[in-house]
Length: 334
Ligand SMILES: NC(=O)c1ccc[n+]([C@@H]2O[C@H](COP(=O)([O-])OP(=O)(O)OC[C@H]3O[C@@H](n4cnc5c(N)ncnc54)[C@H](OP(=O)(O)O)[C@@H]3O)[C@@H](O)[C@H]2O)c1
Image 1: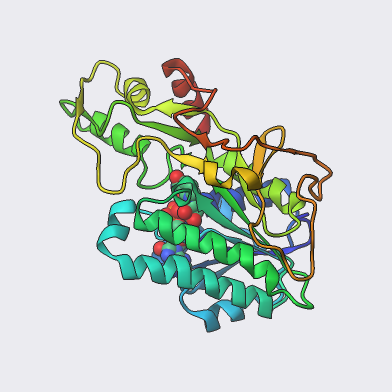
Image 2 (image 1 turned 30 degrees about the vertical axis):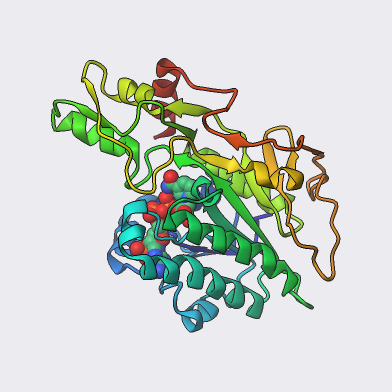
């Protein structure tokens, strides 16, 4: 799938991008790997790291808000992974126009640039916060998901396939709860703040996220939202795992925060198909030129529609990690 292909990763200097690039360079034989992001310092620092000193890597400074630059960067690209985003919930609430410009207008630009350059396969990364969103970050990612699904109706003579990969909290990613708790332990904090002791989250490692994206490149017809089956954690168990012996203090739920995250909403149950270790939410619209049977993917895997009203959320999950399992999972993931 990846061998001999030219791949562009928007947000290639981020947590996902760096792991994705390390993995494909080590395990596959891409022809060219293009990193597209804004900050020259992050790119410079990446270039100094031994694993990224590879002649197949090209660094492009560019903003996803800049369609002309994106179109130029997409020339000769076969596969695009769209990982750029503004993703901090509070920052999005305080800077809504900026979040909309990057996450929604940026998505439109990626679609137009990849169509113009005839890119074959485009995967946009999404988040559980896009399902039944209650904050602006989630709402912009839902818009982005809708744009990528609908883009399959714009392909015309091009063969571009657009799909979405949606998953939950990535263990240890920049700005996430695990480094936050660890930082408090290092600072010898008197307590670990817990917003609500009922809170649960889906829990995924970066490598699982990369594997899922790589598999979805093979699976997609175009138009799917792919959702992995993941374990859940209780945030109180996470705190106990990271900071055993430090008291927890309830500080109240933050703006835009949910008690439980959802990845397949009940309102989409008529569109949701269950496979062995993932779900597919098929498009709610019919495409002009295609009528795929989404119960069988291009990789030959078969799924079955879920019962009406089915919802996949972190609170109702069958699979919860215990405190010891969280510790083992985190040690392996980072
Ligand atoms: N981390 C999680 O827990 C999680 C969970 C579910 C889904 N996701 C999704 O996964 C994707 C990747 O997340 P991540 O954790 O890798 O994020 P990250 O570490 O914050 O990286 C974001 C990347 O996007 C780039 N970027 C931001 N704004 C840009 C713009 N306007 N134009 C071009 N590049 C831009 C950043 O580089 P510059 O700042 O240099 O531009 C950086 O390379 C996102 O779409 C996110 O929504 C993440």
